Image (cartoon, rainbow, N blue to C red; front, side, top):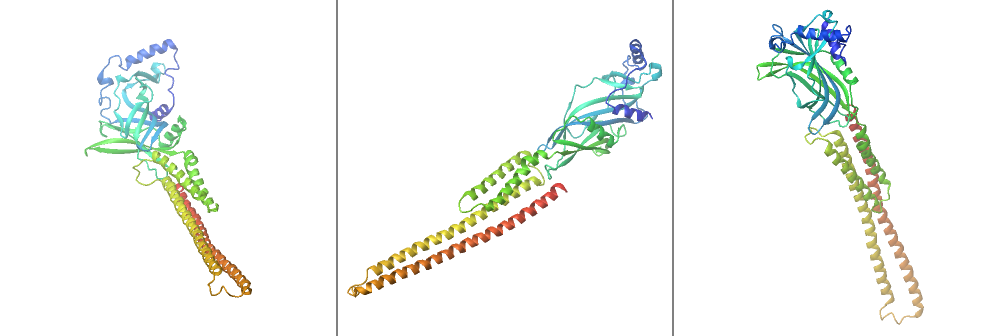
Length: 435
């Protein structure tokens, strides 16, 4: 019953009234009387500060509750978590109990902290620990024989993070409470509240609404052996946090996807000029900028490549392949145009030679009849027109052949390109959201 009352008392945000049944004059007298009754005026080390005399012959039981009040920073590169926590500690001290009915129903009493022994509980994962506010020089004595203190700490703890699903990732970081000197045969650490209560109270007192959301706090009991001989009691708080991904979705994922859509739509741009190729190269450079942004965000020591890196790199490769296909199609079209130009030049040259041959007949023919001259000119004109018609048909066939090959490659690649994009995004979405 006492323990249940103490748990409720310490988990509350404020303290109860010291003496609600006394006026100011009586309250001052009662405090002085209680101070003397508890022996605090004697400054007796064996009564107030010495350990383990106040616990013998029993084990020292330290009650602890830890509440996360804010998530200050999550550093992915350094693999560290900075939080502000509220730690409530209570330990029994039979020398510090009194009958509240004899002291004007006074249930608690404030006394200097340096007059009492306090447990040497440290945090295993701590990289840096500061007091969130100025350290209180007082503890509160409870009439049932407990000493309670409340500290607000700014903790920077090591936390192993898996960024594979970034920015849809969640992490579980441990805060392990352990005595720095006393074994489990001397001190045992027990939590006041269960994990559900700690989670609810932490969410109620949560001060910040930043990039990270507090999901749950789980509490487990464990033991650790030092040098293989001394067994230490441990209380492990497993803090699960989840990233709010909206900022990264708007700033990275959606723009990169839009670039991919623009690349698909670029297949409908007229490819006879260089505008299509320049457009695709611009998209490729834009993806490179986002990859540089990710390089500053994600740690370089990640065991697995994050999915967002696969997403941007995959789209980068797809657009690169699309550029190569555009270069090939343009090459085929230019090859056809070059072929036509060469054959047209050869035809015109042949026609000029024929005309020169016809216009410069041999000496044996010069003395023919003038009537044959008209017939000869007519035949020459018909022959020229026939040759031009045949050459034009050949040029059209060659042009259509190269254009048809380029069109077939373009259409086939577009179908395969869309199919590959669909499969790539489907697999990535499954791994990203439903893993």
